[in-house]
Image (cartoon, rainbow, N blue to C red; front, side, top):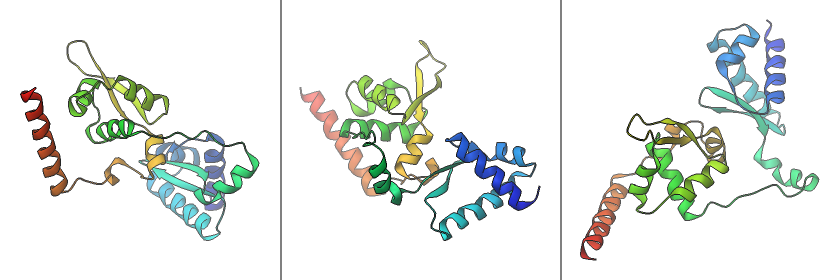
Length: 189
């Protein structure tokens, strides 16, 4: 398939799907190798950026999605009602970061790190589409395992979990100190 036709097909697929599509599926559709398909997608992404279009193609792990550029948000507000916007509380952010860094993780593991019941926080993150059930642990009771979603990647502007910041040595020491202080408090009570 000629390159222009392949670009048109990919554009139509991404526009119609409205969600991310794996690069291997796109390669199948246009009858090309994955490496060639990635090159075509990179060219399309550069063209959209260069032409300052209202849409962009974003990469999410080994998948791609067409979406509206963030700079168009104010114009969309003029035409649509106020979109549903959610606020992540400290408890939700804390729970989400535990899931992101320790996934797949059970509720019990989340509660051990947080020190409090996390049922509501986990359920709310699942409702918001930022976390999801990813399987069950092979242990007594077969507890659910949770991980982050593509919506999490989109919301936080990262292509993959590898782009999440790593805690520095100072932060790890601070976390350790806080945990030790909390452990001493619990013993003293």
